Length: 639
Ligand SMILES: Nc1ncnc2c1ncn2[C@@H]1O[C@H](COP(=O)(O)OP(=O)(O)OP(=O)(O)O)[C@@H](O)[C@H]1O
Image (cartoon, rainbow, N blue to C red; front, top):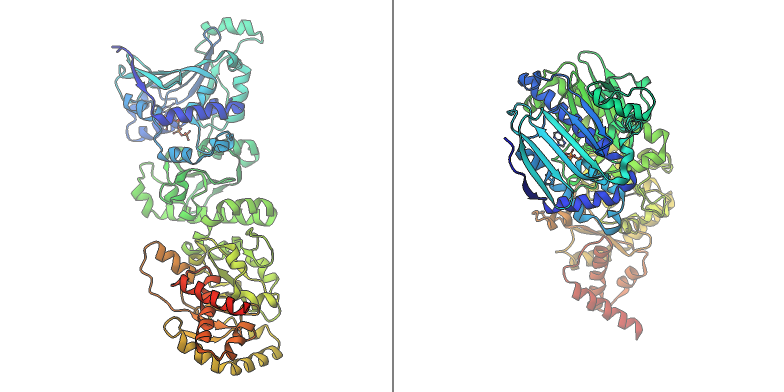
């Protein structure tokens, strides 16, 4: 029974995506074929998986395949698969709406210029809608595997806000997409052009992609023969799973095309590792590192991870990034194909399976080895990776104890060795530049690069030419808590505890400081009384050369900016009073020492504390009082 067509409206975002895709991807219009073949291949994968539990689903037409045909008279191009197909509800859900909420948020984030950028648009996967770049009408006919023969559905749209839906009788299992090509796109009716595109973009597809057999070289002859020979087909792709083929046979382009198929990324991958493991278990892994982080809002979350596919003996089982890779490697996509896991494996079983745990640690190691190789062979390429994914990789330092050293080697930091905030310095670079007598790797954490770079706490080290790493990303304070040591060297915050400057200084220096400490005893006593409820201690600083004062913490205290972040996020942070360090060589401190007017001395004392708070990016308890104090002193100077 055929019903009369019903008209439905597209979800508003669909219309937006459609317009965006058509306009921004016009110069890459041929990718529509790759996208439709990719969907057809996914549909065959899904059916093969469903048939493990229910072989009847595919029995009547068991050889899964994709067929591309055309009609030169009618100006139509058809892409047909005998995969899983869709029910009526699934058509509405998948083709009429944008299921992934990330896509909408992504669209909202794009600025006008970005909307014209094909690279960016490609990053969220253009999928089915790309067909409207070349077609002014699309007819999709489908029937879900296992559903009755008369429950087929026809979906049709000109891509302008509406589509029609119709129920059909006797539709074959799977999906046929018929493109009614625009007059200027008839090149896609040329068999040689289609074959060229299939081998360029879709050769790696694991199912046969077929086209009607051509007879003779004469085009007219071929056309006439088409009717009669409609059932004779040629397979035009390689038709075997790419990762099962020998590496020596595969070209870079093959890997690149395959990556785009599984990741839905428009850009080429940065690098990949293809390995066969034999031993107490056998599996093949093909792992890709992308060149760009996806723009999806989804990316910020660790929960929704996609892109690493589990196959078992060539059968696609499920997306299993979470089970097969740690969260900090969530940017990796690819395939793991196991010879040993049971086909009916569930997500729950994967979570506890010993073989899976081995695969996971093997895959993590492969990725880290690949990154190390890039960092050794091609610094610029590695820098590109770091800029995109460095902050994600840092999570591994805290989470992957077994690979901590490998990860530490891959870290890159900004440092006082350059006037630039780019994170380019490795711990090995740092160690190579350590000063004679220097035992620790010094770092500072702060809210911003400028605050770190100009922090008073690192003055004395700077004056001695000792490099300090500047850690300014939110995750850094947390990460560095897990990295106490690298290559036998302790990592030390310049804002905490004793920075052991004596080991770096010549003997004369430390003599002088001891004298200064003695001389300042009286002043320290006064300040301690004045600031008793605000600081834990007041002492002479080893860190300062230019500034009058700074705040420091004990070795195991939480950094001040971290305390602020946690407080802002609503956490109850036990308040830790800092230690005030003063620089007896500074004129302001000297002035305080000789000040006889008690009120003015108190003002100066409070200023030393307040300036130290401001310099490290903190807020004052009573900013108005600070302004009054400064003004009073300024006016006095002007008299
Ligand atoms: N040939 C097909 N057979 C069965 N289902 C299909 C077919 N083509 C598309 N679909 C369904 O429609 C959905 C949307 O397809 P579309 O190509 O727009 O996006 P996608 O493939 O999910 O992801 P992306 O946008 O990243 O390409 C698919 O996820 C799938 O469920």
